[in-house]
Image (tube, rainbow, N blue to C red; front, side, top):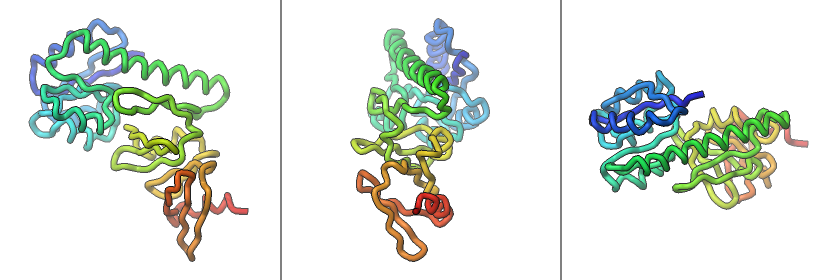
Length: 241
């Protein structure tokens, strides 16, 4: 299936160049263009593209503000002539960052990165389906300019971070483009337990439960202390013997 691509840039020449660079790749189909941040938010939420090439400095809303306001979460490639935004772009969990003017060769590297990420997801999905497991056993998470092959069993807990989620392991934490509600649907409920609107824990990594009247707190394997919401206390009680 072809990936739906949205181009967002306030310069018509920049949008045209992106169309020309994308055209040779049969796996990508441009479904729309926007020339400002406000229209971009609307288009992303309505069209639900798989990939957005997003300029950073634009009228209305900047590219970074667009990411903060969108509900649908596609893969993002930031494009800009200003290299001082690079660090903030990767903090927003972008797939890549294209500094204008960029060449066709540099664009090809971006496409290869996106394709490698998609290929890994497809292979992992087929492997999990073949084994009868509808939930992923491994996921690919971004770390700087590379992706880490992470075993789901190594995730200690998931933490909501605005519209994104933070994935905590014993060694490191990673930012995910997905909200915590969407990640919850992708995680095996026999292994992951929602204890708070902001936390989902891997029950294999719970070391202690502390109760004080009607409140409770979990200590995790990485020494994090997470409060248990009363709303989710009943589910936690099912683990008690």
